Length: 191
Image (cartoon, rainbow, N blue to C red; front, side):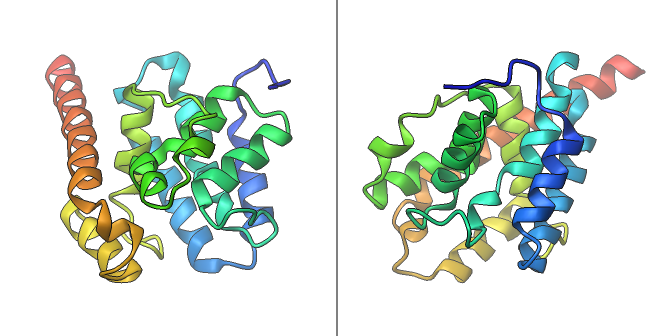
């Protein structure tokens, strides 16, 4: 049960990510770049959700920390840790389901475990996915197509990622399309 009622603070999320990922410099560089990218995307979400977006960007990959590894599925391990620490249920759900994790969970036979976290489909979840999927594994900017190709190459042809690639990539492309539409609307409004 969540005990933190207020929206997550970006500073607390950044500090937690830094502490948990300190021995994984590439993962920390990726995380910091995703958080920066999320900061660029805040105009695509409601003002009340902007801090949520950036905080969850800092937290999205903490499950890679060796100290949190319970299942070996980073989305699930990160969300479970956050839940145990009393972070808001919404944060836990966004971390659990970021970047089409539900597809990988099905291939890894972990869908039931992931399902205990709410699967939110919203401008915030879209922006988190977009930020994650336009930043490479060492923090470098990438196009969405470069990132999808990179993930397949890194995980391998026989991985759970490869098994679900058609469904997961369609989900990610749809989220990216919605984010880009929201960015276009913002540009038109600013004129």
